[in-house]
Image (tube, rainbow, N blue to C red; front, side):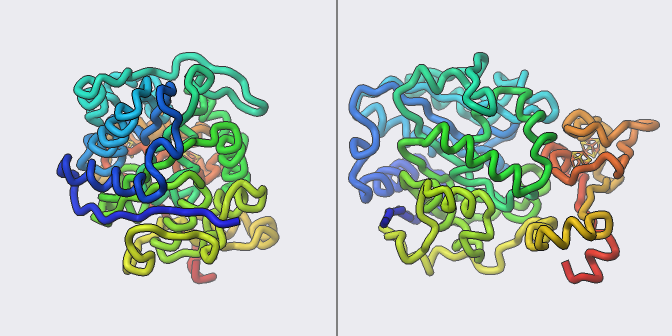
Length: 372
Ligand code: SF4
Ligand code: SF4
């Protein structure tokens, strides 16, 4: 089986440049009509993790969303844009703020697309997903290219976690606290959603301790498109200097036959893949945890620990980390967050949602001696 991914250079978010890059990325794959039938109702899903301005690179840039909307308008689609922001720090109830600050509301108003909230749900096998999936004919996925402390990459497949209904995301974090199990669940979501087209915002990305404020923004100048999310994430892994199977969602999805991760079976249109590779790419601090063989983890899990801690100088004592923790391992004492490590499941949601990058990842002494 062969599949195709397009990679187009785009140096910044100047609207005409982004529109041209998105059009070229999709046209090189056969054009928007090759993915979406004319006059369809389309649910557009950017990454709107939290109330954050576009320049922080935490959310999909609104100009990329605008460019996709323009393509869909060109074939007379009815367009609905939405995301289920993370529940950490109660963002689930703050969609209006998320939509406003990310610039998505303005773009939807200017382009005449409907901005929707994922209020209702329908159970699909193991979890409730946004009912908007049932109301629309197809999904266009617009992830932001970012690192992720638990899953290494948040790209084409991980972006679909936003379809999980509101607070149920917390339940899934608690239930699947092991990274491998969590990634299997993400692939279950991918199997349910199966976007018709994915356009990746890789113009400014997050490296290091992403996907939130602790990561570092970096200009990569890339736009990618394709239908096969497994192939797209494989290409992103390559750009990060990794192998596709290093990304557990990619490995799992390819193993289930949901897409292609063999780089020799992925045709690249546009830029040469070798030219897109980002030198000295910064992986998350906890990334080496995923390299430990599972039997070793079972034997030495108390010793090989990666755990969060607070840099007091940056902490403004807002308590969002305590609200974000799915296992209630953080309590505020005398205004400061205090960790109960016996409850910590190393999900790093607290780091993801600290608005001041005050949570760092520490390694246990044994993990440091083991060279992790
Ligand atoms: S660590 Fe971050 S989220 Fe937690 S209280 Fe301090 S500033 Fe707020
Ligand atoms: S303390 Fe942080 S890493 Fe530990 S369980 Fe809570 S949110 Fe997850």
